[in-house]
Length: 341
Image (tube, rainbow, N blue to C red; front, side, top):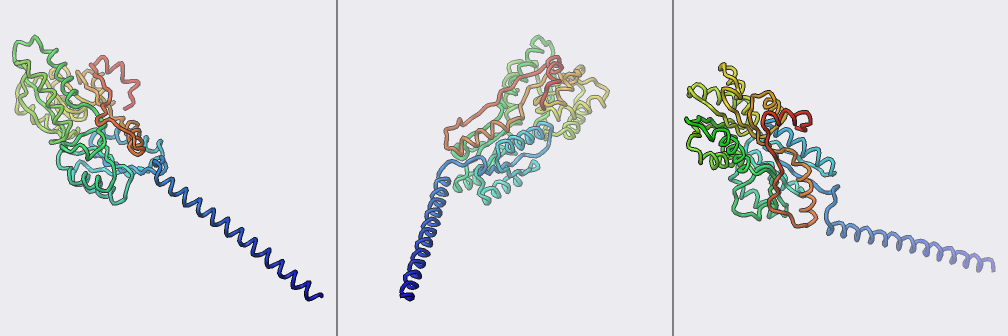
């Protein structure tokens, strides 16, 4: 009888162990299924800011404008919670193409870049498209006829900037009786801002026969090169009435050359510039630059909004233009204290 009771007790104990074991296995199995399902759902749903990796290739650090632009993008990416992969092309297209291919290999979520020049991007952009990685252009455009290679272009209307510069000059010299000699400091050869700012400027001043561009050369958007080229202009031409610089840094370099030649910038030579960064605005407030066309570098917030929209599969405008204004010397003096860049 005792053995029988022991057998029954053992049988009950074994049964209870099996029941508990089955229940635990069932719980783990259910948990595993839920986890897999959750993973599948998150894979098909739009990525969150924590999972977005943005590969960004910058032109370089050639000017105050570019530095402000870089900071805006870095700060905005951090605020959005994106993982930013940043690359500085040092103004070389080959470096930028390498960076884009590296982003593709890393399988980033979105690629954004500010092209060094307009041409020569189709091959690498097709590689990004084939990899299923959307591309956003910032600040500068590309000349590819295939608009499906990128989602949108965020930036200024450079042609309009040139028009604004040309219109101010035309108005200033509308009653001129003799020829007004203009020298032009262009941006990086082949870049969108250099091409477009020249196009817009020439479009407007072309209606005034007295306005004549006597020399035009690239200053690579840098202060040092602007000074160097302006020195050459001053040696080659006895009479220079106007300088049109495609950015503030070149204008600031040119001012050094003008002053070294014993002339007064803004008085002996009228100076028009583009950008409106703090150093340029200070020069305008001091009367050394007569007119500045603004080009807003703070594109970071707009870029992050576009990235999120693209990731979420939303429709996005193919061209997003930034709002900008112009400044005379007096207006620059008023605006300078509150200038963010």
